[in-house]
Picture 1: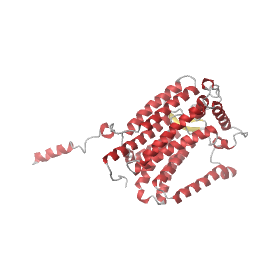
Picture 2: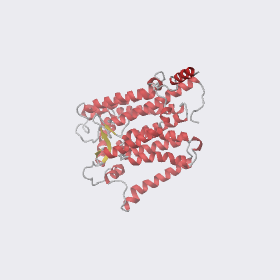
Picture 3: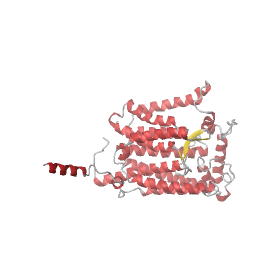
Length: 403
């Protein structure tokens, strides 16, 4: 009998329940993927390289952007083969990592134009706020799904807002903070938050804006620094004279040059005759104002093609949202779509003078490793939601695991 018990113990140690998971257990290469979404993302990366090549001298920026794009595609490919429910299961470690990385950037990062936004890792500058855009969607979506049965309570609404406000308040990137807010609103809306909660949030937002931009500066207690306030409000009075702080770029000058670049591109662009970028009139031409740079070189046709590719991503994203396997997939897709759409609207809007200059990049088009890799991570998550939704549809009706 002792021998039998020993044998049983040995078998138990070799039980599949106790064996270590291999990569093959996590990554399912046989899952379907959305070719239209993949095409749009890769096409935007190609468009980015073309625009950066025209906006900069030499090959350094283009080579790096190509490398970021290749690595990003690899990241998206791997993430798309993983069940997105796994990210839901580790939401709190992901949240801790996000907040910790933002704090690390604030402490160890390098200051550029008055703000500490990134840590120089040598091969690229890591911006925790960019990765945070995706992680905050993962965590906030998981939180509201966990509380699906009490989503109508203020406790749930406040919890989602708190999860977003903490990283948004810690980062020095005002533009990213706005993106976090857009993600939170989308998740609350799709998550089933009552309309009265959303209305209250909207009214509170208006009060905060009035206080930050009007009341507090008037009483000598400004929240934003002078150059930050100037960048945000420049589009309201682009032709007015304004004293620029030492070491800062005149936001009104940026806006004028961006509008001049887009206007001079007309229908088909100026090609190699583009002067706003080649002569250095257009600042941040490979990052914040890449849309204006593309407009001058490739004209209306070029920027229309870029916006059409984004429209393609939005269409496929909405389709993925509507066919998601479960509630978590739908809410997560909504958060990712809000992240992408908000950035496109603000970046394109600030280039044509109808939105504040906030430093928000144009996803997959603006130069930058953190932005490109984070956006491809988001694309990979959308592909994972698509893949799991298609696989579930093939298996037939199942119970929503988030209920």
